[in-house]
Image (cartoon, rainbow over the protein chains, first blue to last red):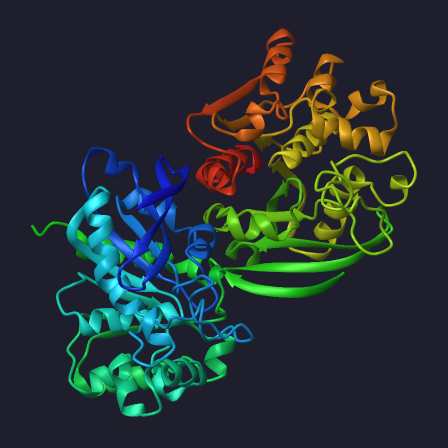
Length: 281
Length: 281
């Protein structure tokens, strides 16, 4: 992998890398924040999966997360939201399909199946790569994300028991099989049979018996996409109650879907992950 | 003035307003962050003047300042960097002249003199407006800024003794009469005679006898514009030493000119201003 940017921030380094992905069969770009503590030894990492239309840049510029990461001694790993490039299939007239909208699944249908394998990329290839090349403690990972990336964080933890110490999400798409964004992407990437979509849906995975880590979710009550029915925390909440899955769903009064909402609560999420990532007593 | 946006953040409100400016003779847009403390009574305000190419949006999205403002009970007032609109003169092929580059002076030359009066706008019209309409404590103001806006903050404090309780700057243009950015803007807005420029130059104002508040400045050592000679903190430092002006110039090793640099130190600046803005014992 090649380092293409390095910026000093909060006593640590905000870095950006490009590498040829074996999973996505194209060059991929990601960012990492290494806190000051990484100078003296490997640190745990929190993965942040971003939402529709984002690259790795949005969260590092807008979320204010690096400050807390520096205080807590956490690295942040910030992948892109899809494969990209001229050779990668796209839906250029759509913001919610194709490039910028990988939906953190492994696509099975042409033309998407060649490159759109963001689930394996974010959960397998990228962690292995950064733990080999950077001062990150092997296997010491937690995961969070926003909107489409909140969905990605939830299904990553649900489908990979033991891979993450903790999971949280900001305004996640909780039940993609039942919303427009999810139906559009899952239909394109996985085909017309909704049965196949359920393996990539947090609510449906729990309905089918997955027993996840405790889930921490913040959701703004004035989020336009909540009103539109894209997020459906109520569906996740219902199935968690039925199956005795520990869910902390905090409805935050007056907050919207923006990074101002994320910035407000990212410190609490990172502190939550830092506790889970600490050495056991 | 008309409120055009309102976003919940850190328990307070990030708001954007548009109004017809009597000073700039055009509609102007600005943002304000009101911390939670403003719900129970007027709060002091820190004005943040932004750099070349910015609008009021950059700092509110990228600097991470609202978190500290909420903790400290400070409002943030974030003006635009110039008048804007189809009727406003511009140099569309230049990022460093015209719209987005008001340089916080009152222009005296056509065609700029009609609208480009950012000094009076930021120091007189805007504070009077927001203190009348919003829960801000009258006259309880400090000022800071970045790059061109750092220059703006310094000359605002130097030319208006008593108007601000404290002043600081991030990578300010310290001596614009002697750098390319300054010469370009001051020459256009004020005419060809460099003698007129000196009234809008922090270093030259101190050379001419201004006795300012203590100055707090952070400057990254890896700032590309420092290397280019646009910022000239050494000139300001020299004249402050000669004239016994209290200057704290912190050269921050490895930091660049970006908002990642601002984000790293904005908390310390806001704490500094909060101390100056507190009621006297």
